[in-house]
Amino acid sequence: MQIAVLPIGKFMAKTLPTRDYRILGWSFSLNPGPFNMKEHVIITIFANCGVSFGGGDAYSIGAITVMKAYYKQNLSFLCGLFIVLTTQILGYGWAGMLRKYLVYPVEMWWPSNLAQVSLFRALHEKDPKSKGLTRMQFFLIAMTASFLYYAVPGYLFPIMTFFSWVCWVWPHSITAQQVGSGYHGLGVGAFTLDWAGISAYHGSPLVTPWSSIVNVAVGFIIYSPLAGKNMTTTKILTPDFQLNIPAYDSYSKLYLSPLFALSIGSGFARFTATLTHVALFNGRDIWRQSRRAMKNVKLDVHSKLMKAYKEVPDWWFWILLIGSTVLSLLMSFVWEETVQLRWWGMLFAFFLAWLVTLPVGVIQATTNQQPGYDIIAQFMIGYVLPGKPIANLLFKIYGRISTIHALSFLADLKLGHYMKIPPRCMYVAQLVGTFVAGTINLAVAWWMLENIENICDTDVLDSDSPWTCPKYRVTFDASVIWGLIGPRRLFGPGGLYRNLVWLFLVGAFLPVPFWVLSKMFPEKKWIALINVPVISYGFAGMPPATPTNIASWLVTGTIFNYFVFRYRKRWWQKYNYVLSAALDAGTAFMGVLLFFALQNTGKQLKWWGTEIDHCPLATCPTAPGIVVKGCPVF
Image (cartoon, one colour):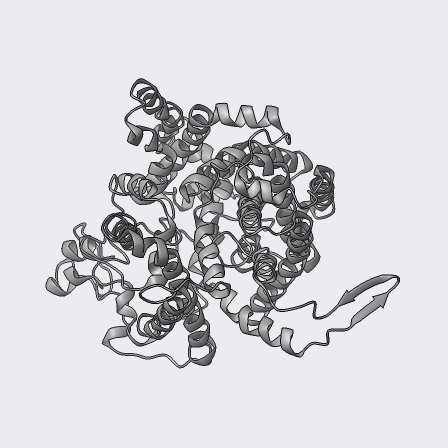
């Protein structure tokens, strides 16, 4: 997006009239001067307000998609608009309240912003004369190469997304394919040559600190995935979208794959570990900052320069918090049957978001990894309101997704801090961007849900259809587990997975020994870098992420942030973050071009290189006597 804005901004600076206009005593010009870096940054931040952290549509669109496409609910557009806008504005309110802890301190450096800072500087600043390419030249070359290359895994040769050579060596072995498949198996030996696949779930590995990569790697190698069988949820639903208990008891109990069970268990541990880790390692700094409040006893260079601008008063953000809270409570009364979440459930969700946003923000601002607590939010409300999947979805939206939006806003506030954007200008841009982009997000999604036949229905659509909604399928599955079936049947007394609940306690105590060791041996700096929440984050994203996605992310991050940083440090300092931005930009441009020019028109290639990973036996059963089409019978 930053690349598309640049020529448009330059063109407008040359063509728009420069004279002043007056309206009601207010003077302004359509062309105040040359298109500069600050204008470029504020446009980018405006656009970022409508997306989730790391890109994509607003997270609340997923809940609306599940409600309409999977539960076939008659949701009104106005109710959907309330959901989208209130969750985002609520997040902006949290962000404003937490600026003094997560934006102003120099320790909160938000690694993901460094790539953007490098990109803006490459596009607007002239490098001093030196040997080699300038950052701008390097960016253009890398972006062009990335753009051209992505046509290969994105359309011509998709097998490069999951390169599972083990399946080629043993084409008739179920065991080998279950071990080697990058899409349906353990992914042993599999890898991806697709940048979109590498950066999809943990962000760009080039901007993640090496210590965080090591922590994620430790968590990743702890477990291995297996697959399970789908449950037909319509057989256990009542007409008002609640659990039909007799139908559930007679149809089937819910069984989780080892992958999903371990992912849930890691979520339990991650939640309590995050609270403990931040309290131990950052608690003193947070307390000191809260006592200093806005006195700014010790300012870094960025904060000193930002003193030239008027600050945004806290009451501006209080207005957003109170307004979004009132509208959310109003929605719970007006559309009570639709949303299933009562007013007290809304307030409970707000309290959870208030409690967790700060510790999660500290982790993300220092490691570039965001420990999620989606599972915890759904676990809590699942116990309180069992058998109500829509209420579970909405509680997650307000109790967890508002935090995601808050962290996205905070990251942009830090970017504005780095780039010296006036705070009040940031406030207006982020607020207006939220309203505009949120409304457009919903309008586009609504049109697709109303006009694309059988959207998200994998039983009807072809496996290579672009409308199968794999990301939203995971959201739907989570609503079934936590909302429809309920955690009491899975994790309560007598539940098959009751022992996983002990991981709450394990997670709470795991950071303690590392904190004690860091105090006993302060000269061993690496001990303080052991981050239990980030280690548990090695599980995160699977599903829908596969082991191949995460393993390739780890390898790429290790190459650049360890080997290149250690042996070619000057190159790394000059080009690493620029390369990350170039890879993202080139891949995004080609992805859009492929979709509108070829995939959206139904022009699909069919040949050996377009098959997923050539591991057709990876999902076959190994138990004796089971007959499945295309699979050998033991």
